[in-house]
Each structure stands twice: as structure tokens, then as C-alpha cells.
Length: 77
Image (cartoon, rainbow, N blue to C red; front, side):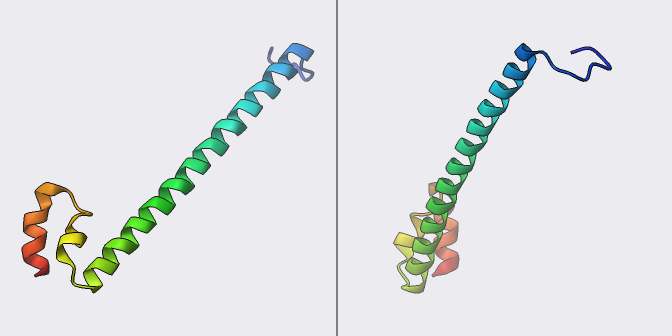
């Protein structure tokens, strides 16, 4: 496209439309993945909180990385 040009050629219109469709599909895909991840993490968080309320330290610790379990376990008990 040239500076000052106001009307796009049919090829430019088609290219722009294709790019927008692709951007829309990529955007929707990202949103769906983020919603899935959000649900997954919320489920894990709720399960860990339930385990802590029920004083099930082993289960609660299973939601943390192994290298931090030792320090966290002593702090919770």
C-alpha cells in the first residue's frame, strides 16, 4: 500500500481479511486455553484447601513441588 492511497486493491482486501480471520482464530484458541487452564488451577487450589481444612497434610503437600515439601510440612504441622 502506498502512502496517501485510500482504496485497497482486491488482493489487499483479501489478504487483510485472511489475516483478520487467522488472528481471530488464534485469539479464540488462546482464550479457550486460558479458560481451561484457569479451571484446572482453580480445581487444584480448591482440592488443596480442602485437604488443609481436613488436616490431610500429605495430600495438601502433594500440590507443592517436592523440594519445598519438607519445609512446608514442618510449618503446617
